[in-house]
Length: 426
Image (cartoon, rainbow, N blue to C red; front, side, top):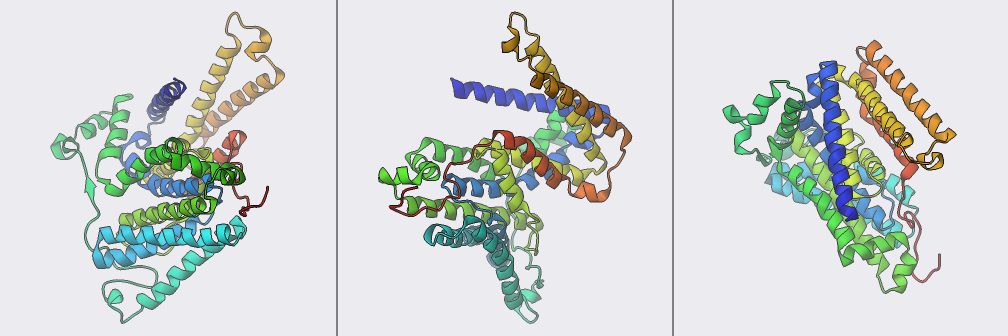
């Protein structure tokens, strides 16, 4: 019953979020806030972040901190580009997965096998990934090679041979595009829902479907199978798991290799978007994925929400730089909703003062929320357009702000990052 209530609350939260977005669109006049183009871009930008975050989730649930996700993504991009131009998209997927898994295996050998500090090993992977791929590019893509004649350079691979798989529902294209027609009406809420659904279901890459499917699959495997229970016990207390006959080393190795494979798959998706490998195309998405995982409190559902948030912020600034200022209005409305709910709870009839929460701390929080809402509304009214430099770093600033807020309720696995040796007592 508890799980059902949480599920209903999540649906209510999503509905409220869409309602607020529609309200902000009407007030501001920025139709890109809920346009299909924005949400299509957001989905494409959220997928690699989400895959990297899933990689971090698998590793850290087994007690291994993996900040080497960025380097593993880089390996995935290079090998996907190298295999994809020769043998097509399927080969790109396989090569990227294996390359990322290899990066995970190196991290596992260092941290689990030799007891190297997890942070040091992760930093080394992040340095090793770009170094290896640059070396391979200079060897295999130099002038005079077949790859160079096919269009490769030191920083790019030839284009993929064959087209990445995409699909749309029959009524979402051409003259029968129902969502497209409704979106153009700009009606309150209806056009917003049409834009969101159209952006999320039109010309969808097969890797998007795979990535979305990995969220519930990861939840099922880690929380509803004996394998997942053992893996999570390794991340909570490996010595207790060892006493129950769990092979701690094996589970840590498996989790970190799977972690690298997810990061590599995120790199493959980036190659599918650009149709080739380009040096530096990960652009820190491995680190943002790690932040999304932390924001999600080491759980798949929260991770998906975090990846969606960062992807949306990035997609909106790509579609309309002027619309970024609506984040001020959006934040103000959310603060006012929070303030109204707080007042409702405190003024509920029949509640004693101590149960209603009428404390100095509560009044201080309410005053801060009201002041913050007023400041944000003032900033939205005064600032017409943010400097391009700030617009570009909006997703990263949002990452820091979200982590700052989320850090108040986080609970990482108890043995996350702890050095384990069989037979030792902690």
